[in-house]
Image 1 (cartoon, rainbow, N blue to C red):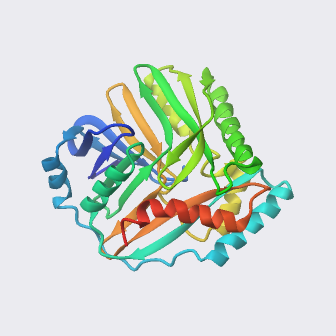
Image 2 (tube, helix red, strand yellow):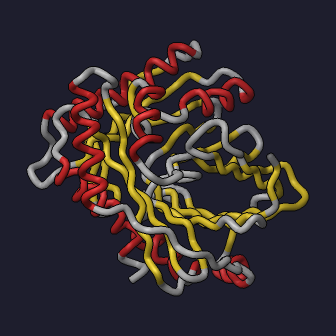
Length: 321
């Protein structure tokens, strides 16, 4: 649905900042939820290149709402859910599930200062901040591309399998392979031709993941936009197969993901870039709610998964304390 609001962002590997606000124009900034049956917001207007002055103007009237902040996920609850998931996987209920947690930080949030800190710290991330007139404000520095269209070529990536203190084990390579299979299957179902690139580590803030680039032959703009919805949510954020894994999450995660692990990004003429909404936080006048998850399979160790989410949460947490 068309939404009133505004967004500002910087693409991976770029230095230019872009912005859009509701108004005249055919450009779009889309904010989609984790679950397909929730509301997709679309800010329509004209994308502009933002200078330092325009960036300050963007945040000048960025008024955050105040709300009672929810409780953080406890270590006991999280590790208990991981152990339940490992047992469910060993009982063949599903192959993989991504269990997330939320962390509440009570602080006076300064959106412009936080946005600039993320821009400086994560040059290879999609750094964004948006605010809708319904009161929803989010910020993030996500490492994961869902789908990008440039000059009739599509690009995506399989991203998953987080480096541990001991490097990458069978667990991380198995998790990554599950994501490749999931994306490949969806592409074949939609009759897309594609090529897999070389699997290499990709640094993402305080952590590194296994990453495999995927180049896809474009069809038409309309079909390619439909592919975005077909790919989401991938096994990197939900599970495999999705339905039984998601049923487990609804019973055990104990919070509503809303727009965390959804996707967001922009469309300009025949091109678009959409990213998975990771390393992100909801922003309020009196604090922030951060989100992070870890992929669980039969080889997962609960304490390691808790530490992995700590590392991911620190992407934003270090700039809020």
